[in-house]
Image (cartoon, rainbow, N blue to C red; front, side, top):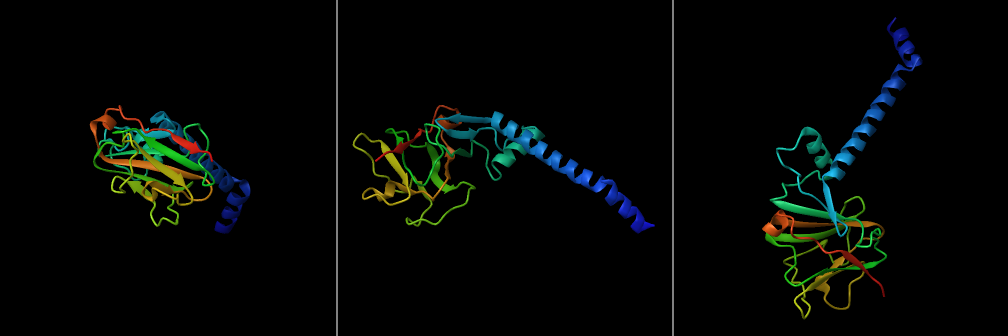
Length: 202
């Protein structure tokens, strides 16, 4: 009797229907969460930030959407995060190209703790590189230009000079994350903007 019942359930398409229904529900949920996260994201010069991440006052849907976008993140007032996979012109970042991130004098990310710029592959994993380091930060000893500005060079091979200003990029598509821990008021109040990433053409 039991085996006959199982055979009927299997043959009736109930199992297939349940699987299809669960799959459709999952895909719909992912779509909704992506839409909500996009609505909470502010993008300037290609850099995207979610200011409401981690706040206890967020509703359940917003919390779930932002948790999916930034799985392990502090509230914006403790750590500000900007991410990008495109340059300032809207083109996908590629390890086959070189880029420059130019900070005007006095416009490096203002943070009471520290800031850090990290390059990962398109999925978000660190990749071994010739520099032996995966980030540039306020302890890297960046060389300043004559006017006090600073340039971070992003490319796969080490430049002939200012190696401390070099962030090695992985092959293929990649993305960047800029983090500022204990961000200053200019970041918290939305006055600070990360400059665009510009492709360097030889």
